[in-house]
Picture 1 (tube, rainbow, N blue to C red):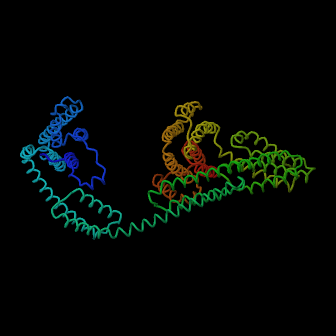
Picture 2 (tube, helix red, strand yellow):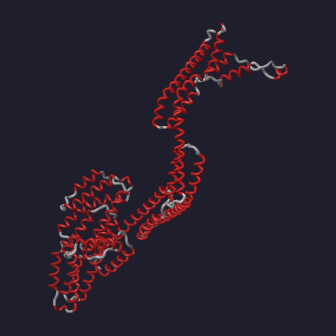
Picture 3 (cartoon, rainbow, N blue to C red):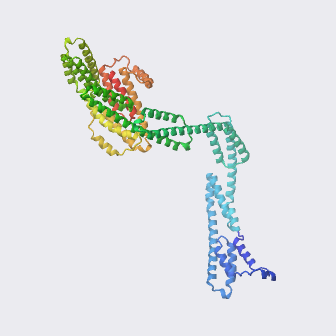
Length: 639
């Protein structure tokens, strides 16, 4: 099919305007004459700008060019010959283009037939539309021929489209009934809204159908009715999320303000108890004010984590200074034991005790260790004071003074740590013999006082000695403690989201450098802990979530361990573990009817085994480990 083109119209119009009617004399005088454009210049402008797809224009241009070249003076003009070559080349391109489109349509017949056979109607419709657009660019003869070629496929396509519209109408009526059912459905608003969206999405996939507008109107109106109760829910949820966002923002602002005040304070002025309480309350409130809009969660959570990390750093620095100050008091108290001026030393010790109290509590585990050391130094000094006081009152009674001296030495024994205390049995026996030898009947009233003091010390000594592990057990505890402390150091880094710089090979090499643990069960427990630690190190990029979950699980296991030991030794469990204790007692009752109660030896062995199991187990937070250790120590004292 041919038609006129913009280029042809432009050339014709240009020629028309290049030969105007003869102007009047007045017009000629009042308007400057236009320069005439030659035919060659017109063709030189038109031919390069004419597409190979515009055959009518190309043929007109070819005819005009041939007429120009027929003039004898222009026959051999190179410029005209070049234009003639361009026109011929583009006409040839046009024929090739037409042939390629015809071939494309012919080849598509088999593809279209296969698509219709497979029921792929959407693809078949798309291919049919492309073919129709292609046919418009061909000659009328080719259009008629190809239309006859595609006619059978058109009938089949029309039939399938009609069936699709019918099926779509039936499906849409089905969706209308489902939407109608949702108008009276009393499901949760969120679930109901999801069902409404699913029906709407399914409707969109069906495409056009018979009675499309009428069906859509019914479906749309029913959808609005069904969604009406959901509007209230989503509005309330949005308001709640907004309120929670404000509440969580306030928590961050309050914590940031508090951390800012800590930064302005000297470290010794920070109230550690207040800081811990505030952090715990902030975490509780943070969980309470949920949910928050998804697009706000990430940045707000990061802000909360940042301020908690800043608070933790302030607490850590303050705790380090706190412990250093208490250690300084301990060093001063130890120095006072050897002070020549006893009265001045006693006064200074009382001042040190007041200073200790003024410092307040810090980490439970650190405080317990530091307080034991400080109290031992003060007890030794006060024992010396008591001894000197008694010596001053009874200067003439050498035996009494000797007995008091021995009591002071016994007090000093009680201040020793477990390892030194375990070696003090022989010294205790010697002091006991010396004390009995020092007592004499003529001491009268002082004798009973001294004997009571000795008996009290003896009971304390025996009670503590009974609860000490044997030397083999203590050696075993030293071996497992070395490995456990190494694991604990790395676990603490992971729990505080710090990077572990050691590689898995370096950790394994260090592990193998430790002395072998003789107990297979504890050795296996430590090996399991190492493997778990290596897995946590490998999973470090998960922001510590894996090891924190493991720490929570381990805390539950250790809590059960403590409860079992407390049940065996008749020691009360914390109120928070009351339900767990009752369940364990019921389990033990069901399993142990008719069994004899455990002996003291069995109880002690059980507690020692529990303590070693606690040492070997991890990961645990510092607070949990200190709490469980204290519980087992209390049980050991009562065993």
